Image (tube, rainbow over all chains, first blue to last red; front, top):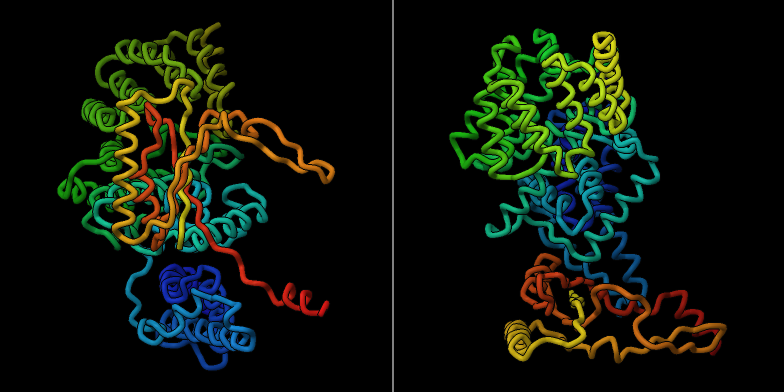
Length: 417
Length: 132
């Protein structure tokens, strides 16, 4: 491996951890990022000559730390030359000597503080996502912008604003106290799952799956499990993402969406499934069963069926029912109805769906019409199915999903005549 | 850091009933006493209703005076607290104790840090001195 890619790989793998420590030491996201960039540049300059150090991550941490101290000293000298009374530089003076010598090498894991700061509810959700990906993930600003189909300048500005708010409103850099932990942890999990979903079922655009976002979300999920392994929902979330992501190669073929039923199950990633299954078990043993664990358990039942016919729909329906009790939502009711259709007779499921459709929320949701269309198709009510596919098509905004609906619609029209 | 907590609540034309007024006052007193007891209360006061408000706007160098607040919004500024807090989380804790006087929980508290007035900068200072 050449030096550049060696440095880059360390950077990608370790930058979150190093950055988290640098932020704690310096009390500033910007200062920390700057020091890390400089250390990376030093690595590129010095490694080819002196060879890759034995512990590259520690080398970068030490170097970045030194850069940080240099920057603080430069700032101090600059300030001392001026009237010190006029310049209250609270942060610089408060942080200059404390901790700076000690924490360099044995970095305690500051990533937990960092993720709680990044996912603080006082930041808007877009900012939370961007900041989490930028600081804890391994993606650069242009890469994140590309993954979210945003102009780079927009994303950069989003990051600047978020960092400014953290600094100016003093969003704390610490793990929340026990009484606030459940809601704050739920916010962190939600951000990670949003990142995953953005990649998994891209809501708009031409590509159905944006792997880099899914991979990042899985990485973040793993990190959260590593940092807080006793929280069952952390395990549930990671399991859910792994199990869904295990189907990535089978979900799209020739640019078209392939339904779970039609997927070539030999393409499913066995190692992700095995890891997901063991995590679900572990999570459910830890308890209490939360929404991520229940969804992961559902995904696990799909993953365990070697043919569509072997799917344990009865158990899936029961899990959706439980999920609906925890978090009543029209989408969960829809999935519950589909599971009932598959286990207890299509007609029963269809009746339930039609009942749900009377609520305004679901009738504007393309998956509602797609699910309804699918059940009508199974009942050979081709004309009605075609109508439902048309309605779904009007509401779908992803090109690949639309292509799938069109294909189904054509089938219905061919059979209808 | 000092944080200002702006209380927004819905103004009802007839005001609150006597019992509700008492309850509201008691809740404010409790929050204020607690903050004062911890030595972090820097100020707190209610505002008179928006019916007493006057807006002044500069137009072509002249003060244009109009009646009332500048916008018709559902919730109006009704009072404020200034509390010294370690960080935003602490400010959020205080804000959750301050009553908003709104039935049905429609009111809200907006938290804004008070960064203080910046010191005279080098450029401003120099500009001031050259005239001497």
